Amino acid sequence: KRCVAIVLSAGQGKRMGTSIQKQYIELCGKPIICYCLEAFEKSEIIDDVIMVAGAGQEDYVTEEIVNKYHFGKVRAVIPGGKERYDSVWNGLKAIRDGMAGEEAKEGYVYIHDGARPFVDEQIIKRGYACVKANRACVAGVPSKDTVKIVDENQFAVNTPVRKYVWIVQTPQVFETELITQAYKSLMEHDRENVTDDAMVVEQEMQIPVKLYEGSYCNIKITTPEDLDTAKGFIEHIKS
Ligand code: CTP
Ligand code: MG
Image 1 (cartoon, rainbow, N blue to C red):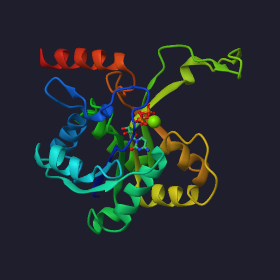
Image 2: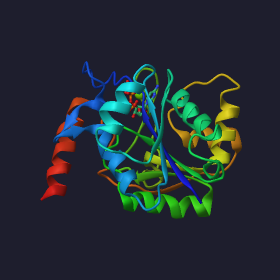
Image 3: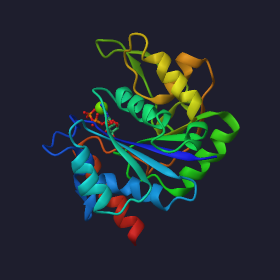
């Protein structure tokens, strides 16, 4: 089946605090967003890419990223929205409207944070095997740290058993028809605290979402210290 990657690049990067959005910061010679686009470009699994850029930044992304670095699988650069789920919904509608071709509508979709440079072919392949078997799955890793749920005053109220705590990453991979239905349903009512795509399937479709193995290197660049960690990973890969 056809596999489309929706690459999210419409966030503001408030926690990074730089004037330039974090996904366009240069890391060892190229913008952060290029790393995941390269992984999808080289992948045996991914056929098409839909890029979701900030509204008004479509031309910038087309010229400075897609054309400059020759990402031939990119079928469209479309505007995102206010929240991450708005951007995802725009990406799913682009597939529904045929921007990745007719076959893509009945295939699989990889929803990926443009701020995660270290997705690789192994992760992409594990996602493919998992989505074929389970319809809905997300990359993740077991939490190394104990997690505590706190109240408004930061007092611990609950400690989930660590072996059942996983840190969720992207790609989040779904049957395209399933996730589109889930988002359509989500967008018809009030939304609060929707931070990942798996939640949407869990809440709207009552379908179990399987976790598949991502990697401890598959970090999301979120705050300034993540840039140093990322540099370290790149040097490590090069050597
Ligand atoms: N994203 C998006 N559209 C939004 C919000 C986020 O496409 N309205 C994308 C970001 O560009 C990023 C990914 O979703 O690649 C994960 O989001 P996050 O790490 O929260 O990025 P930002 O929202 O940009 O950062 P912050 O929350 O610190 O402002
Ligand atoms: Mg955000």
